[in-house]
Image (cartoon, rainbow over all chains, first blue to last red; front, side, top):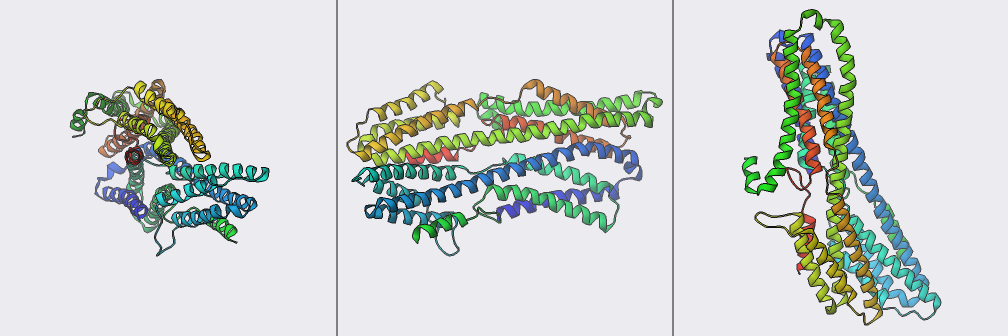
Length: 251
Length: 268
């Protein structure tokens, strides 16, 4: 919801700039809007326009890169889950206890990352405790032969990789844009659009074009915020890898 | 009000806060000074100097500088923002490592209480050092790193009784060296990344560009106000680079919430 509100504020400021430009165009004396004035305004605003388009583009691309990294981390976590389960199965029935705990963790983690409507979301604390229980269950196993010893070591390594991956996912809060920076960017865009509004003729085609462009740039700002918070909003990390891992270990 | 706030928070803070504002104001003065000089020349120069042929020559030449400076400014802001994000990630990394060690020490058992107490002391000192509060003298970096090394010493002094403790001890040792690594890499990222001469060159480009705009601007307030707003916009961009480059002062700062959360976790 907050992204939508942020986007609406951005849109209101940018389109507000257009309207202020229109207002001035009507009120100002004719010689203020001569061709000479127009050429000065156009060239000076072109600098700001280039600057803001570039910054917005780079920011979207950085936010998208950080989103991809987070999707990869979720995929990594689900792959580790499958590997761990396969090796526990190879270990033998003694590892069943650890497997039960692993399944409990996998269900809780999926629920935490991709909560379904109407069900409570498990806390981060409870899921990490479940994962530590898996490791404790592994540490309680006493390998009987060389094969079990090897598998035991392997599972311990995998469990610490999993814990590592889990913390990494927690840590990556994403590519963040400080609030004052966002305000500056919106200010730039408002100036640019105000100058467009100032010299636009009073006809609906020009106004509709400016409206669409204001929506487009405000959409860009919403997109940055959306990609920043990949666990909520329209753009979300795909849950399929985690769900298919869950399906694979239960069956 | 901002100035009063800056002064209330101690001289050092005020100095940093002021320096970003100062750079922004200097840039604005240079760029808008360029506009005024352009106006002055427009009045003084004989009219054949400002013919349409001259105008087209100046416009194409300055367009190159204009595009160049917009591009460089945009790339610098974006780079400053990435480095700001990297620093914020560094602090978050540090706090996560603290939480991880704390959890594993708790799993180890009461024998690890000594190491936990040391970790707690270190986390308190480090938080104060990274995010100093009013009227508090922050500890020297040297004391903080010594405390961190004493955590590792306390870990090395532990004698594990069973395989589980052995595993956890090895894990904690690995984590403690990660923590030390994270601490050093944070230190490494703390300096300024944008050289001052580069900044001066950029301001010079922008001044040229705006001078040329003013040279051919008609004598009316609409043109002047547009130039004023554009000068504010580019100086805002330069100030933003400085703000993002000094994440421990000014308007934009690294959020301290992750470190405080870690401190809370360790305190229990």
